[in-house]
Length: 178
Image 1 (cartoon, rainbow, N blue to C red):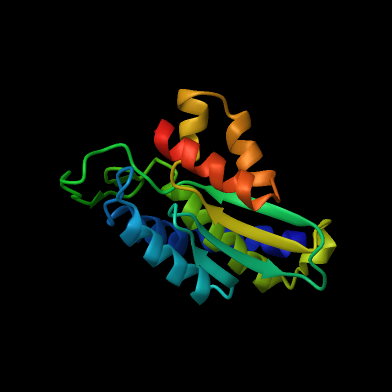
Image 2 (image 1 turned 45 degrees about the vertical axis):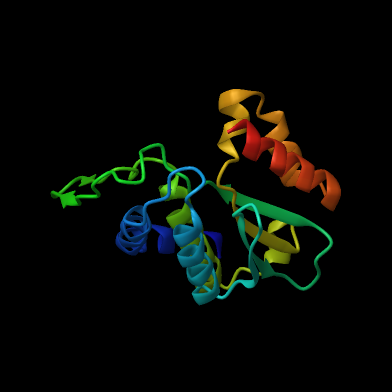
């Protein structure tokens, strides 16, 4: 089944690139990710994830449930971009490359997560069989701020904590840090 999923990922490349372009064409500089978050939440729902949520901090999460849900795997990316809101988003493609502001930023991770969901479904891989009972997909807009401006351990702590109050404090701190 794993080989079937890997083969699907290769075959799904063009669709993944198209979704990457679609997401890149939505301006999302830091603190202006709302439209991209809304579209990504729609894409998560279209891909069959449950519990799709946009948090007050702009995080988009969704769950691919297994038979039980006591352990989790998180696939993560960020959606904010480094260019100003008024940057022209002029798409250009040739046979090998896509030219578009933000195309090589973490928007690839967003599109790749969607492809992974499709590959797992296509191959019939039950989450429980990959050493977890639930795979969570999360997009944290300012997660990379921790590594850029402080220490990546704070981003990891934010992802791993089950303590809601601690998670809210860390998210607010990262938001202010950025």
